[in-house]
Image 1 (cartoon, one colour):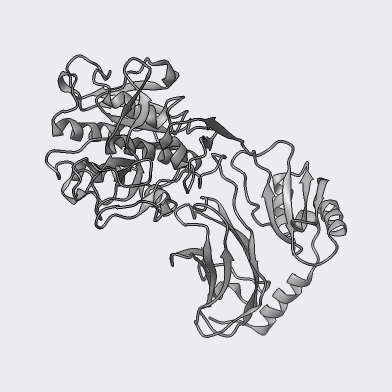
Image 2 (cartoon, one colour; image 1 turned 45 degrees about the horizontal axis):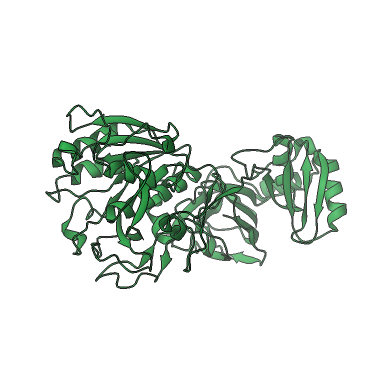
Length: 511
């Protein structure tokens, strides 16, 4: 690579020329999924000049009107009547740490005196508080496929959200339940009174219930999985409160369904034995569910083992009967729809989450160590819905900033600067932001990555391409929805060539 000192001098001169606001550099602001009206943005300022004076100077330079100035919880201000183009210029200003588009927050709804199962899943610890707190959206944008004995769709508590997708028993029931099992399951997933995801769309895919019982051929289950893979309205999740007779018969079909982007919550079985011999429960890519009793003990009937993922309430669960009034049932069949319901709530907030990300979110955010006698090899994880929160588009967490200078050696050696995020529940979002300020005399030499607490690297900037002597001053948007927010994150920088020097000045992470 050939460079002249003359070229460097020209770049240095160009970088010293003052620009007008119309010519100013731009950086991404953090976009809201449901923007509030009025061109409203929250601006976080770096340490430095007086907040009031900085706020006034910045609005005079880039436009908009100050609505509020923040000096206690943060350094910053709210500006209204600002265009998105002006917000990008504001985000690039050296005095600004980050700019956030004003979003639309949503309140939580609270159900009093719910079933013990609902009461248990929204809190980490006993005793029960006789409340079930859930996102007001209720997963209205999610479809849950009930592979079971059918669903009695005209029951009032389903509020018209239950429908028939397919019937593979083909006995004239046309997807309607005449057994009661599937309706009870669907009620726990998403009925108004007894459901976890109280606004989810419920679709009956009948593959059990021959002679109005609770059985059916394995082939009907495979057909159901095939139909869902071809017809699923995403985001979607499948409830499988059943087990195959031939354990591995559905392995290939399930693999295809997962590859298509649809996850399944599967019952581990009611034989009080190791679930690794039970299909589809044994399939590692699914969310396999064991059952607990109201005292947090593994239910006496529940399967267990290292092929399972999570526990949920399954003993003496109240939900809908065929006549539309409540009835009680027990089984891992009753535990599984609690998980499917929480999965629907998570997908509502994270509609692009992959099946693996969905599985990891529920397992990683489950409450540890609460289940007594979990069974040999069982993960001691108890379902917890509280990490999802009330907003179907959850706000980002942070920001965390490291302003310590870190020299970037001219030796093709990676250096890093760390930010620790704590006190933030759940996984990050698909639109996390990384604001980077790096001083360097030839930015084309720099490779920049974000390294998560799990050790996974996310490329922010590859080496090569257009270069500048002004350094890197950019805000990158990154899909971190599969990563837990809490932990130590690293900005990793490598100078892949020779001749030029620089340093990490400051960087800010919002997850």
